[in-house]
Image (cartoon, rainbow, N blue to C red; front, side, top):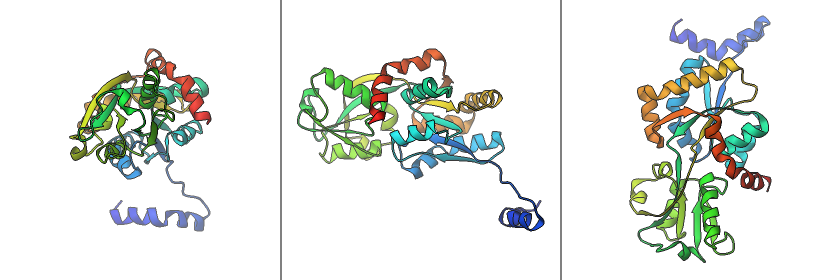
Length: 280
């Protein structure tokens, strides 16, 4: 088939089918849902290597989708909008326990919750946050939940002792530090890679709060076992490909491992708070 003929079929195939009395069905689209930690354009660019890799193996169109915020992303996940979901460990565990979603893999290494400040506006100790503003990407992020729990244990309650400002991206949160709008921010080593160098060079880690499980790959509850096994196999092999290795390093990871029950249950300590936050 020539390129010109192929183009004509894509443009006019459905019309020809209607005229001849049959329908020309487009190949179903396989949808990957990715947590909204970037703008839609940046998410598409960052995850393009994975999208192209799965499209090649699945032999069908693959599309990247997300949501406006973390809560709506979890709603879309539970609604079954995505064939494959890349989601935080606490969201993945809820989807597994409450709705039967199937964990496949988890990124490595884990995430580290970091409390950072700008070198131009030092934060000598955690208590200096009192009366000031803390920048976060989303209060439903597990790293943010771990940090708020730590601050609460230090006698600092969000809304009472300091203000919480949610940002669309880690870069936006970092910018609020450099401009002096916020006294501190919560980020991760992976999040630091999303921040432009001119901002990142000004950030100082005040405290390493906690290590939390990294993002999980989930298949829908109704995904056939054979498809789940194929997806897991392909995804495990992806890091050995040149584009897979580059993809991982670009987003701050070194590999993927099977999402075993032992790995999944590490998020259980965050489930009560997550359910409460999602219900508001």
